Image 1: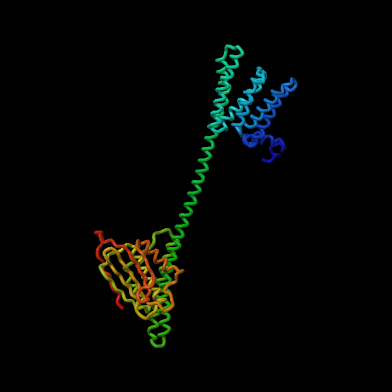
Image 2: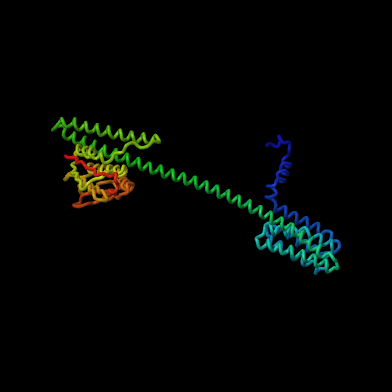
Length: 420
């Protein structure tokens, strides 16, 4: 609020700010030093004129104890105890002198229990007991009959500030515990936020990789077929014009199918809905027929009795066969047909695609999505994947998937053969 609106000057506003509890806590060190100086002046000025330099020195020690009672409670307790023990030996233990010592002693006892370590706190308690016993002993030495009274009086007078310090210490500990819990709660909340963000980022990265694999499979396969058909039509245009129409029909069909697949994929990305039907084992006939129509010779053989596969396993087989035949069509040599082999055993299905590789040329791009995508699909389906040089220098891609023939719902499934 503006000073003109409140009617206060800058000096008055600063004075009001100094009167707040926060300001007292911030500047309490200066306040303690000021109280110590005021005590020393009040305790020593009256004694200097009478030559009581011993009282002045003791007042100086107790003033130092006042200044240290919070920052160094053990040192303050030691200084105050030394000053108190010295009084009887200096012969100045009269009522006036002793009354001067009460304030710093009570303040030091309070500081020992409020701000000191456990050892300092219990040393302060010992000082309370010793002080009460000493007060009763002094009264007995001087012939007083109220030793018990002075013991109780000293115990109460010194024990009350010590007890108040214990209560303040408990309050400070509780406040510190509350602050620690608040900080831990904030740290936990921040950690949960970071964990959630990391999980979301991981999910998005996984989704991006999945989309990249699907786009790669769809586009690479379709473009390979389109390129092969276009090249074949261009070479055969003069010798067999009627084959151009068949090639253009194949190009249009392949491009139309790829466009539909990409549109379905983009629709899945735009909407939070379940994925549409994915290709599987039943779509292998059309897939192999399309490659054969594109000019790739394929020998497809199958051994054993097949069983129905799960959706993820069927999709893995389809994508691996699609990617492998696409690479064979784009990069492989046409010296011999590509071999597509299904080997059904009691516990596994092994699918192998083998093709010739031109001399000095690699079949796949190691930095692309092909090999990593096929390997991840095999892993997600619970199987294994391998790609590399096979027999006779041919390139071989192999995926091995586990089978479950013990289920009563599993029935033998014949595998149809696509003939040339």
